[in-house]
Length: 262
Image (cartoon, rainbow, N blue to C red; front, side, top):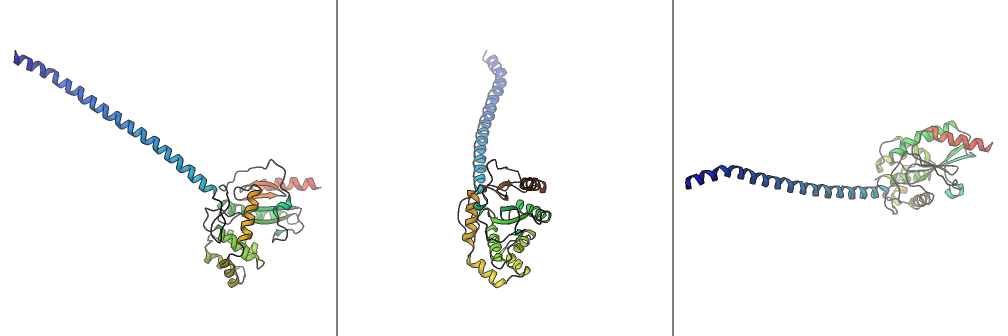
């Protein structure tokens, strides 16, 4: 009888072992899935936090530069048009009277560009500005205003180079040299100064003592007050156009304003 019971027990032993093993495996799979799901949720949260932090940094922190790369709050450069639905900004708000300009001295169309020299969209817009000046030689007066972005390492140095060249009457020659060049290091800026015929020793001294930083900072602050958030931002007789827009966008606005003046 005992032998028969042992044989009967052996018959049920294997299925029972399989069942127990299955339960153990299932529990392990469930636990792993739970841990994985929790980790994925945590990872998602971390990624969202990181992206948010990057977006805040990309917008830029407020600050004042002394030859460094600080800038007021500014959004990422964009090529998307953002039409100004409010009334045009009064021209006296830009405070550009007496500053060096390009184009027609008595131009009926005054374009003020808030920009910097390291931003790729600003570089892309530079030929468009020149095309406008070429197509409207008697109608357009162009002013460059500074809005260096904090996350571009050489943007403040380049802004100072523009002003230091302006001290010798060649701001827009430096403007062209910096947009056409691919290097904004201190050595390159000094080289551009020599290329456009500046007194390099005086230029280097100007760059070293940061004498033009207050003016750059004032333009940055004024731009922010006027609604500038990204570069490049243009004002055509106070009407805002944001981004490296095609020439046709600027032409349409210029032609409309000229027609209204007739």
